[in-house]
Image (cartoon, rainbow, N blue to C red; front, side):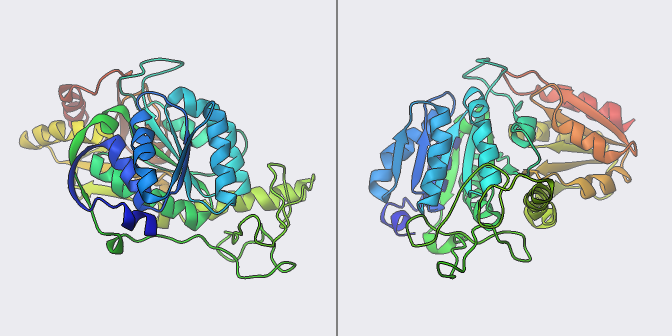
Amino acid sequence: MAGYDSGSIVGAHYLDGDHAASEGAIAAGCNFVAGYPITPSTEVVERLAWRFPITGGTFIQMEDEIASSIAIQGAVWGGAKAMTVSSGPGISLMMEHIGLAAMTEVPCVFVNVQRGGPSTGLPTLPAQADMMQARWGSHGDYEVIALAPSSPQECFDLLIHAFNLSEQYRVPVLFMMDESIGHMTERVVIPPSKQIKLVPRRFTKLGPGEYLPYRAGDDLVPEMTQAGVGHKVHITGLTHDEQGYPVMNADCQHQLVTRLVDKIRNNVDKIAFYHEDEIEGADVVVVTYGITSRVSMRAIRAARQEGLKVGHLRLVVVWPFIEEYIRSLAGKVKALVVPEINLGQMVLEVERCARGQCEVVLVSHAGGTVHNPQVIYDAIMEAGR
């Protein structure tokens, strides 16, 4: 935390989400960022390039997103806390390395400031269409953690939490901002470092000859080491044993991949969290995340003024998904209304988990702007009849 203390800007500030995320990374102890400019995420690394000389961090502009997403993993094995920052087209290029980070259990953060797609799409306008890519974009069976902030303050607070989760579970964490949140400017309070809880890296205390880099304890998360401190470490994306050496058989594949998945799935109740508002006794619950959470509030308030019992469930951690909670909630309400700035992504998870117990209503928007609250209001009122 010395870097944060030496360059801290404690107090209240007027920051946009991109800049707040930069400060969150610094507060989390991030000291290495690699990236390549892409709208609407460039402001994150621009601020870090300005701030890191003060806090002791290193920013490097790589030749492309592929180089950026592997550079941060090398930095982590060298002892750094690292992240990369991009948007849709760049994140698509990074997907192979997200899978590599999952396979080699590298704690790191990928910030995605979402914009309209596919392809080059709408570089300067909002969307929420990368949500399924965040979960399923790389090949094979694996689990990641993904968070969706809904304010500049949360861009600061939750990015610290993203780093903590990455360290606790040795997993890549995706930070799913959207253009509206990234470029929204609001009051952001940055606390003193002593008020910020950080999860330290779990460095092994075992000596050379005793330590196995992929031997996990009861929590299924192995301890780490740092390259160059005496341990022999072999890092590969191939299916590997506890020593890290490739083993090409079904038994090793089952043992390794099952552990990679279970270390997240077994801890969903600890990892995933959400915010509730007037859920108890509601006839309709609006399920939101990111900027759509803000836009939906006007529609929810208007529906309540009409006498309809409307609850609001805001997903903060979107992956892993809160399956059991949605399943329980679906048995108590008439409908779940899901507004998204895409043509239907997280609504598929809501629908799957509801299992036909209630109506699930998608309020879609192809991107380029946020919803008109009237459209969400109409969907709520129709579902509540």
